[in-house]
Length: 140
Image: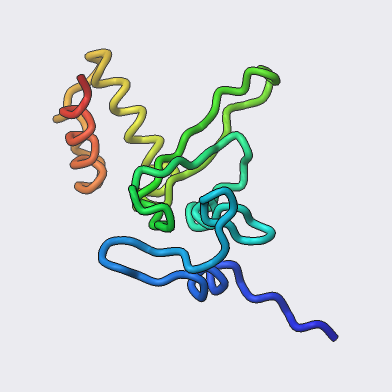
């Protein structure tokens, strides 16, 4: 009987180590990028990205770094199949649930359209309210 495959996170942990603020990939590289057989880029697994329309791009200068916060996530525009719904992905780096992220986006849109004020959002949790304030002041 063949041995049971190791969980994906355990495989990634075994093939990487922490160095300063980076999570350094000790495994195989393919075309200069971290590669894990059966997965591809291990960052996709760390960020729970299964949709091929969602891409990851390196922000870090270290070519072996797989720290999820050092990568950008790009949801591609589907030009070939316009009838497909946009890819759905919740960023695990944010610390917010899918519902909280939806509330944040809705509140930002309503604030931008002057449909409500920050004071009207007093019913939301403090951390959600702080995120809305931060995003609202960061927008041009």
